[in-house]
Amino acid sequence: MSTKRIAMVLAAMAVLAATMVSAQTYNPDVDLPKPTGLEKSLTKLGRGLSNIMLGWAEIPMTFDKNLKKGKPLGYLIGVAPVLGTARALMRTGTGVFETTSFPFSDKEVNYEAVLEPAFIF
Figure: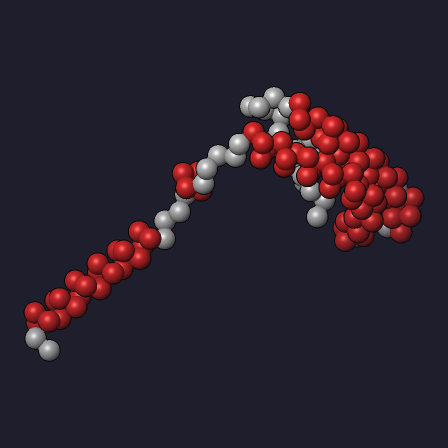
């Protein structure tokens, strides 16, 4: 192959590589539209309904987390169910609050999750 041909192939490869690199850039802050007030309120409603229906699952999840931490059997039998029940009541109560307050929220704030994690699963 001649030197000119090799130079043209290398130039074509460089342009192709530059195109591929620029095509892979993605910034979600710029590329995704901001959620509207309706989308935020419906997310709050869904989070609230999920917390109402799955609040009870905090009891076995608290037991499992403490079991994986290596807590003693007395702790798992005596303390973990009490903590799980308290967390279940908090999650269910938060679900009731979010479900009833989703249409009345301020449009700029009050759409963030009250509990972390926002969804139990």
